Length: 279
Image (cartoon, rainbow, N blue to C red):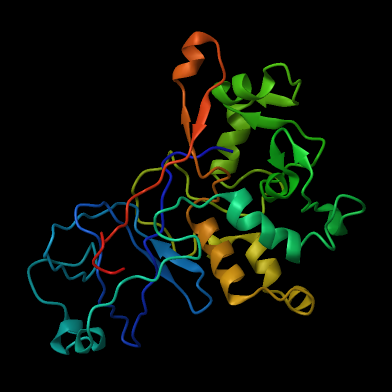
């Protein structure tokens, strides 16, 4: 239950019927792309990033296509090029903020899941409650297959932070964390990209919102009769999963640990991706 490289979302852009898109990206900022389906669920993501300089225009015909000849698809002008390039539409929390479970996602879970999956007699034994266990909302722990009485697997630094005089039920358990990263932990409801994996081309819907049991359940007929997420809440939820479902929208300052004190969490405000030109 940790974050490797926190990612912000610059935004989403429309894709034309022929699969083309024409949009702006910030200069001198590493970016990667995710292909989404009609429900905004991830189909596939890039495993590397690209960086463009100011004023640079780049076309994408596929990372593994031949560079020796023009692709057949370009014999016709892509539909997106018949329009002006667009700025990506950022998520509800904006493009200068890191997604944070407590601030941006837990209210969605409380309003839509907690009525049936509360602390007392949760349906199917899945508790999506606001009960705090080891500093985390139980709803988040449930997404990773942890029941309320299960110890929380953490790294050494987290154990130091959480056990200082508090007696939390945490254990240093690297193997459990690795199983979650590989989406192999029993009862895990969301699938994430393994931060220790390489940049191999992935299978379609190998992980992310398009392959998460939680999202599949929400799209099932049984849940559609009772759970009505707004367009905003749906987009926020699936977007959060597709950036590996982070709990914290903060960074950890480890320096105090050298003095035997608690590490400090720092909120980082990221600058506007496009400066002032699109405000």
